[in-house]
Image (cartoon, rainbow, N blue to C red; front, side):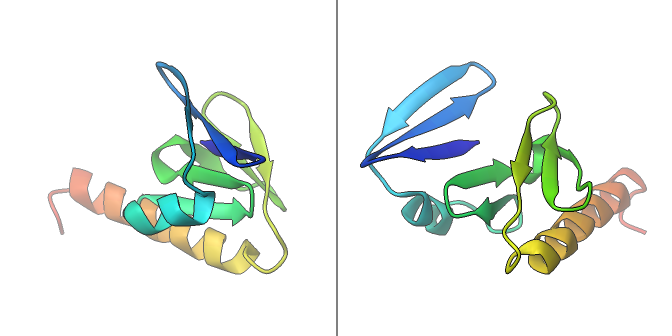
Length: 95
């Protein structure tokens, strides 16, 4: 997950945290849109780490909850559903 902090951005990874100078929007353009989402302007989240979308937040596997902006709610919910569907189809052998 990425979080903005002034001109620097901290990214929390399973193996630690890194700091880079690219903006969240710049990084979002570099990463596969089908695997990452930007629920709010200061956060970039891996779909792999999302476990639920209880109302207006994204819940991550570590228990963290990230708010979803009103304008992104429907897009995030649809993207998460698509991601989960593709993952399930892959487990079923692509049926």
